[in-house]
Image (cartoon, rainbow, N blue to C red; front, side, top):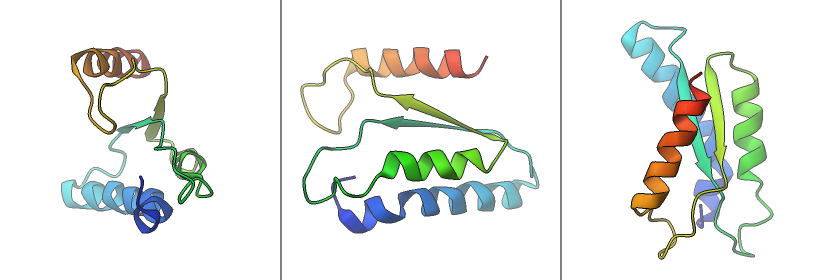
Length: 98
């Protein structure tokens, strides 16, 4: 999410992936659970609101669950989840699946 072209088109590509997987599997109502972590904070890309873009995409599809995983434990390295982060994400996914 630190590369502007990727960040700008992330929701569009995600939607395409979801739709194509449903076609490939012949499961038009396949539920997708999309977890999104806080995007990287960089002035070069902060004007692109990827959270809002994914939110809008998921709002148009009754079979997409958008989980904002913004309260993960602090990570030592950016873009890499450690064990605590993975466990917290699993908890959020479990709660979102209810």
